[in-house]
Length: 581
Image (cartoon, rainbow, N blue to C red; front, side, top):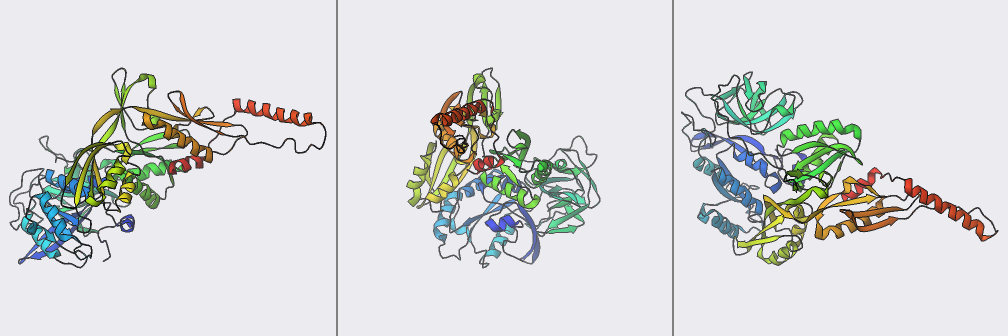
């Protein structure tokens, strides 16, 4: 045993957060009977909402856990709405009542108002010292229905009569239907699919297939999570477990797919699966060494197995070589993936500044999606540019309301409403462009609220705005990695700060180098890196001043000629310094 027992990754233990969903099975005796509970521990952060939604599709009930020192968070509301959409039984639980700064009664009142239930129905526990934890398990057994056909399918006949028992004792064999809710890769066993069996059973050495990808599988191994993989003989209806497929190609297993028997009938109806997730933030990943491109490609394909919300496509850059344009759900997601690539695969990478996806309408009526400024069509062909808008919800103590609203006023926003969850907790609702909040907004929010405020956001569509492409020219050459799409009103300030930074980091040349920030051919800001000079008169001694002037004029003519034909090769570390900025 160890602290954070279900958080298997080193990153999870270091940061104190859950990143990956983790299934586990436990046996529990209650009222003279033994019950099998299939539990899935899920993340809480808004960037990992997709992990939560996939878990909710595989279960019958949800424990809504609220920290009494922090109260209801923005992500509490987001995950509650997901559980309600799936029509799950919700068991509200308050945790950390053993701490000195616990606000148990206040949070109980807020949660009861949110769920519309009696405050006495909400359990108060301490997971650290075990207070009332057994009441949570008893409540799960009493309130959560036994697994039948699930919400994807009608219940099968002959379900075990005790409420909460995981395995069903089907009287007659039924066709196999199992939902893949996660997967991972093992060098010896190939792709390992995490499944919830809705009907039928999966046995070792059985021949099965995935319905969508049509991959035929000879089952190498089946088993359960404890939370380590424990080998078994079969998985029956209602159980959660794993299937070792032996497949070496990660693309052959897709999260949300249905596993069934080979030679399935045409009338077979697969399980509902999942809504396709759309990335919200895009960043370019380039290996520091161009020889590592294939390693990065292989690493991303294996990471996608464990993180279905990750998307990537090949990309090339004049300054950085070959790489991938990678789609994420948020900035924490970017951090976690880059750190996992570094730790698990030993890859050193250059990561571009994050951007969002824009909807561009051309004058011929065609609409295209653009994920980087380099892909933006010629300005003469553009009709309009629309950027993604999100519904932003911020929960903060009333005492910090003024400072939070003052912070948001510095960003482009559309105020919607202020609601109160309790006497001391306010819920602010705004509509803001996604590009405004993906970089450092969360850090600033935590700073102005002493760490008490929390936020969650949800995409609500696109909105046309006056957006322009800001280009950076170095010695009259366009440097694409520095190009960005920005609001026209802030183009000057963005351009000015970029050219000033570049003046500091680009090394001096033998000729004067002009750095310009340009929008549609108009120069908004300019800095000049002065030329290196050789002391051509240093060896002279005495004589007429015209001797010195002659040499200086000769040097000047040489620099002017070099300026016309000279090229600036921007070193690799300049891109690194600008991306870290």
